[in-house]
Image 1 (cartoon, rainbow, N blue to C red):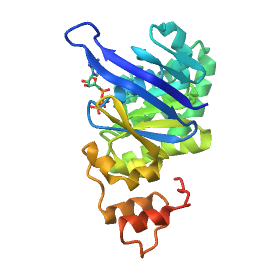
Image 2: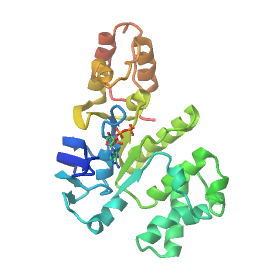
Image 3: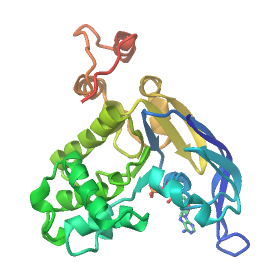
Image 4: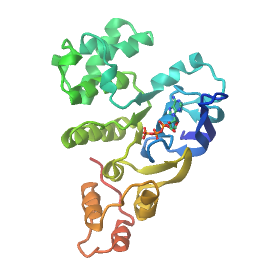
Length: 286
Ligand SMILES: Nc1ncnc2c1ncn2[C@@H]1O[C@H](COP(=O)(O)OP(=O)(O)OP(=O)(O)O)[C@@H](O)[C@H]1O
């Protein structure tokens, strides 16, 4: 089942002088088991939209159908508790939410909160550590003695341990160096491929869009401006320009496509030829 969003509106501080309509009539059908990018300028509504996917925000109007839940205005938070487990939301800088004295306790916090016995929760923690590239030697260490990238892995493990069906990532590579960012994105690509997890990625990085995503949603001033597969998106540089992103030059575009696993013939020296050469090719994953 895809994620279906119908006529979603979100108004912050309704009825006050601070009233602000952040989402206006959003209609989307987001495919399962794929990686979809959500892009748009600052303030376009990306974070507001993704916070509806796990019931952190409830719509002012409209509906969402996700993981068997029908979300509509006035829904009670207690009715969406299980949705929070099925849809893992990773905020920007998730490492700031670590607070326990050991990594084991931090990762086990979620399952225990959902009623799992301590021993079972600790078993789940051991299983999830390798998924984020950590081993059991980390269990009794304090999260605060780790590097920024490692802390972020621990925070993500704390979400993966709940075995989510959907992973929503709000700029997950913000603040990481290029190597750390690549490792983080490879982790998500692997989770999508090996565990079949649906991934939604809020990003400003067009290289990540090209390399890791199959679909693109462009938001603008609280509305959906475009939705397409990634190939169609890169065929329309004006879509990027319209949200203030400089489209990559032909040379850069070629580099990005090759890195993303496409085979590009040397004679493709115009954007049109480049795009034509992609026809029928399936992008190879990391
Ligand atoms: N808690 C809030 N109260 C009032 N207005 C808010 C609140 N959160 C966001 N907004 C406003 O809603 C609009 C959409 O914000 P949102 O954070 O969803 O955008 P965004 O596309 O995620 O931006 P960014 O790329 O900067 O994270 C903005 O105008 C923002 O100022």
